[in-house]
Length: 127
Image (cartoon, rainbow, N blue to C red; front, top):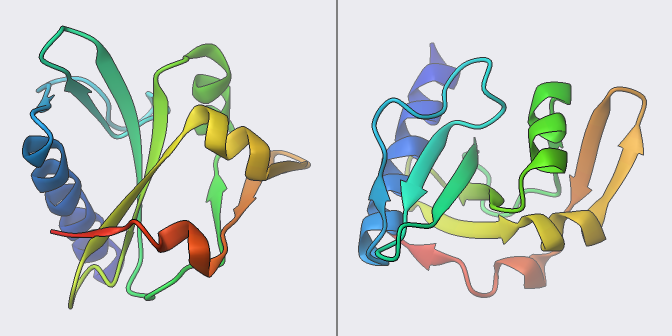
């Protein structure tokens, strides 16, 4: 139950963040089995495929990508991971592009682990 609440709050924070930057959430795209959670569309029609990783921690040290998420990222140039911190108390969103993730990641058997430093969240925005 707690994970469902954290996930829902993470989605709400990412939706607010996307709207703030003029991107609209595309209904019906993403979800279970797709390798990403949400899709948004820029004013010029470009899409972002967004995997949401939410936590109650102020600064996460790492996040996993499941095999299906990593496989989707490998195929798509417009893949993003949005890390939402302090999701229940003071949510901040920090998007990481595919390029940023590829610089941080290393492969561990079937999952992908990304390490984050405090300075990675310097530009996180309160939503």
